[in-house]
Image 1 (cartoon, rainbow, N blue to C red):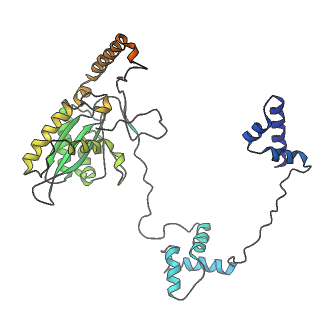
Image 2: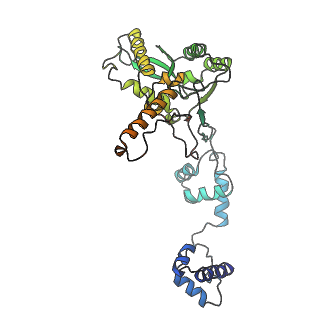
Length: 349
C-alpha cells in the first residue's frame, strides 16, 4: 500500500511538471487534492486503520455447526433444502439455527447442491448463431392455429420460410399436429427447391412435431440439419413468429372461423401468393420475397439507387445528405451473438 501511494505521488508530480493541473491529475487517479496533500505530509504511508476482527457474540458454536451438518445429512432430511429442513425441525420442537445459517454452512462444505431425486435445473444455452448469404441455406418453420367452425377445435398451419429471402417455400394445413405431416412437407420442399444433403439448416421450436422421431429421421435422410430454440423462448425463432403475425393481421384475414379445411387452405394459398410475389418486405429493402429468392433484387435496388442519384443531381438543394440506403442486404443472421455489434438482424415481416 505504501509503495502504491508513493508511486501515485510521483505520477502526479510528473504530470504537473509536464503542464497538467494537479486537480485534474488527482481526479483521473481517483483521489482528491486533500488526500494528496495528506499523503505528502505523512512520514508513514501504510494503512493505519484498525484491522481487529471480533467474533460476533451470537456466532454458532462448534457443537452447533457439527449438529447442523449431522442433521442435514440424516436420511429424513438428506433430500430436503434448508428452507424445508428448518420448519420440519420446528414441527418436532427442535430449533438448531436459522435457515440462512444452514445454507451458509452447507455451502461452505459443498453440500448445497441439488438434494432431490429429480433432475437439477439445466443451464440452457442460446442456439448457435447462423448466417444466410443466399437462398436455401437457413429455413425457419413453425405451426400456428387457425380457428375452425367448431369451438375449441383448430386447423394447424405448417409453414416453412427461407430466412434469407423471406419466401414461404412450403406450407400445409392439417387437422392434427403430427411429426409425419411435417416430414412429408419437408420431402416436398427439398424436392421442389432442389436441396442437396448438408445444404440447409432447419430451425424450429421444441414442439412435438418438430422433434418427433419421424421428422428427425426424415431430416437425417434428406441431409437437413435441425436446430432448435430454447424452451419457452419465442425470440429464438423470430422469423416464423413475425410471419404468423403478418398472416393474422392481414385485412383479408377472416373475422369469422374457417367453415372447413378446404376454405382454410384456399385462404392461406391466396395469402402465400400475395406474400411471395406482391408484398414489399421492409427488411429486404422493399422487394418481394420471390424477387430476392430469384436474385432479382440486386438489379432492382441498383436501379432505385440510380433514380435517387439522378433526382439529387437535378435538384441538389432538396438533399441535405446522402440518398436513401438502397444497398443490397447481403447477410441475414439468426440468433446472432451479442458481440457482433455491426450486425443488423432483419426480422419484421
